[in-house]
Image 1 (tube, rainbow, N blue to C red):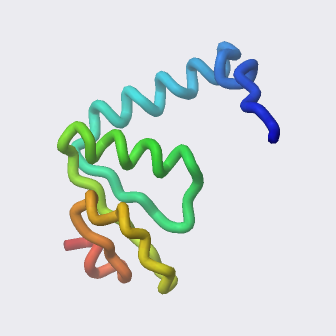
Image 2 (tube, rainbow, N blue to C red):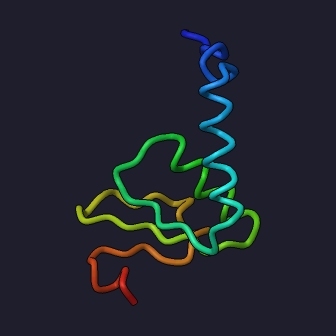
Length: 84
């Protein structure tokens, strides 16, 4: 099994990127997680839900349900729902 490359996330560019993203997460009132997305987006959305910020999951394509998405506000399937 491959291990994580901590050199990348501890590099000054990685640290600056993390700080920029985390500052934006702290500033924001809500999060819209657009599917499909990667691990970072799932981590960010989970953190935001954990501190009481609203998280909405937006997916244009019908997908298999993800049980843990129950912690988020809503799962939206079209742009009109998202605009509301």
